[in-house]
Amino acid sequence: MFFEDPPGGPVNAGQNRAGQNWAGHGPVGPQLANAWLPPGPALLFCPADRPERYQKALDRADVVIIDLEDAVSPANRVVAREALVAHPVDPDRTIVRINPAGTGDYRRDLAAVAETNYRVVMQAKAEDVSSILDTAFQTIALIETPLGATRARDIAATSNCIGLMWGAEDLVAGLGGTSSRFGPGESRPGEYRDVASWVRSMVRIAAAAHGKFAVDSVHLDIDDVDGLVAEVRDAVALGYTATACIHPSQVDHIRDGYRPSDEAVAWARKILDGAAEHAGGVFSLDGQMIDGPVLRQAEVVLSRVSGTRPDPAGEN
Image (cartoon, rainbow, N blue to C red; front, side):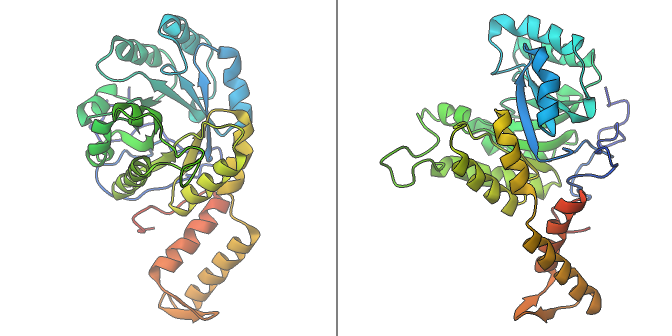
């Protein structure tokens, strides 16, 4: 466990194989030193009771989320925890999704993770600060209930919360609703309904406000490639660090979406070259005024090529 140091103290490094952070963050609120960061944008869920798929998932995606919660039936959770311990894969590219706080499975999940080299967990249905601290692991808080949504800002500020993700289906179920997306014959078929979109936006803002990374939710319709591509494009534009997925076929679309186009890279380099010539001051380029916000946007584009992201507060 990493709380041998005080909250906010050193933890094991969370960098990619090149020693670079995919999404670096600055000193905004309580921070863990060298907190883990996703080494790439495609995070693939894998049922914990299917250990033969762990490495296959890692071979296809940037990170595997070994799922002890929704992907495993209650009857199989003992077997799933045993598999988690008995079949280790790269801990630098692995997240373990644990069951919600307050359940017996939650405690048993944490005990199982403690027997492994994994040090990053995703807490399902995160709803309060104390339950995040209680994990004693680097924790990605999954905001997917009405109560969790109202507390996302405080949860993001928790010292061992390293990132936020959001989920639509449990959220809508908690509202007493039936669908997170507009259906056929409605105004915007396939798109999120307004409440889901609001939580998606709020989670992104809460994460950025506290210097934590944000993971966009899964696209459940595997055959809806156009919808997935559109959501990934929007997530990138809003500064999401990664997108979770449920099928290997979605990985390449996610990676392509987070990879800047040649045109975007050329634009960003032109902006940074111009900023250097003008000593960081405001200047005009191709009829556009270039100031601090535009400069930071250019830095973000190039960071997705180099693998090192400036912090969301714009301090790097």
